[in-house]
Length: 225
Ligand SMILES: Nc1ncnc2c1ncn2[C@@H]1O[C@H](COP(=O)(O)OP(=O)(O)OP(=O)(O)O)[C@@H](O)[C@H]1O
Ligand SMILES: [Mg+2]
Image 1 (tube, protein in one colour):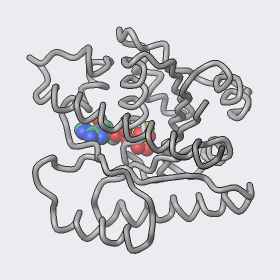
Image 2: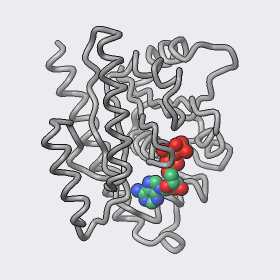
Image 3: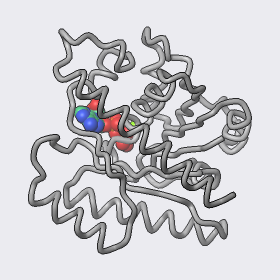
């Protein structure tokens, strides 16, 4: 069963948001999901202290347990295991990448963020060498406008293409609903359209993103078989 990691050494790039959107969307569709909160900031563990019916999807590794042991244990039981790691390059990120079927690199379409994402990719490449295996990965654009593509975003898209770094077709747009996930400690389907503008569009965006992740994982399994 696939292990998906959100990794980018840039703080605030959208790792926890990506994990939560993906995890709760897949769970709403009936999949069995666990998200390991491997970040000492406990962003997702705090989310799971809310009232969401999906709160059990967040797992905090027990003290002293090796992250790879936690991953292996959950992977045998659940259809999807997602891992949210700390911002900086760290031991957990290496452990998570060692087990990953797919590494998501969320980033804003800003030049400074793209520069840091390049570091995430070179770290990933050195992991590939270390483990002597390919680690499938793709950039996820975060907080983009659903309406306009800025000149900066266009340039970054071109650079990524020129560097042959894979990226998702679906971006996670800037949406109030995505930040309300944390503000209300709920899943998208549990937010109220009265309090959250553009909720339906955000839900649609989440469904399209989750579908693309599943499609990428399927394609990989097909090529590995
Ligand atoms: N698509 C989005 N729309 C609206 N707000 C977003 C979106 N993505 C991220 N945010 C907001 O940006 C902030 C940072 O996101 P997030 O916590 O997911 O980043 P992170 O990479 O996990 O950060 P850290 O490195 O600190 O763990 C949060 O306040 C989150 O609500
Ligand atoms: Mg985080």
